[in-house]
Amino acid sequence: MPELPEVETTRRGLLPHLQNQTINNVIVRNAKLRWPVTKKLSTLLIGQTIINIERRGKYLIFETGIGNMLVHLGMSGSLRITEADGLRKKHDHIDWVFNNNKILRFHDPRRFGSVHWTKTDPLEHPLLVKLGPEPLNREFNGTHLFTLSRKRTVAIKNFIMNSQVVVGVGNIYASESLFLAGIRPSRAAGKVSKTDYEKLAKTIKQVLRASIKQGGTTLRDFVNEAGNPGYFRQKLRVYERAGQACINCASPIQQKVIGQRASYYCSHCQK
DNA sequence: ATCGCCTCCTGCGCGC
DNA sequence: TGCGCGCAGGAGGCGA
Image (cartoon, rainbow, N blue to C red):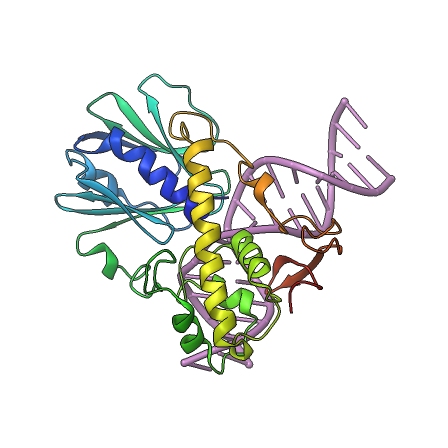
């Protein structure tokens, strides 16, 4: 499942292949993504040149001279570059054919991903305008979390997974960063101290940076190859380790559903 | 305003 | 070995 590090890795991988390249054709085999892919998207994009690829949260922004295409990978989506005669697989829903004979191919078995078109400032798009700060920016820090969380009763794990609070913290990294910060995921967000939030902001940055770095190495050929599932697994400290020994104290890692999501923590190290 | 539940969809793992 | 079932998961939408 693509978390922010994978989206960023995808962006970096795609950019050198697509920058300044022109779209010759758009082939939509299955328009039924999370939101229907509009015909307008295809017609408008043909003949356009990709000026840049940016990222906001888990959204990729493909900039052209007349507007921007937004792509979200959902939880099973991937984008890769293939040659014009590349083999097609099941769930390859969209191709963008470029004038350098390369194809940008959107693959998404569960179709939770989406593709949008916006003529104006992409950051003003309804799906992006309310997003919280980027976790790796300076404006995301303990003070931000502390201020926003006052009087909030929601579990801190749900709080940091809320994209209006901070973008890019998915289920895996929420558990991982809370473990490193020593905070139990079920605690009410409004009851967590400023000191703890300062620690948490740091561990969120730490976990995401480490993962981007790893994505940069293990997924170096991500855009050319058939993906690489589970690349991050070996580094995880609590996620999917229920019953196994805590790396700090050897207590068994607990698993609990919080906000409809599996959550993992050490009941000894996290208070 | 905030919370928590529901939904979309497919692949996987489990039990028989 | 094969079948059927239940579940996971990002995040918007909605009812309370």
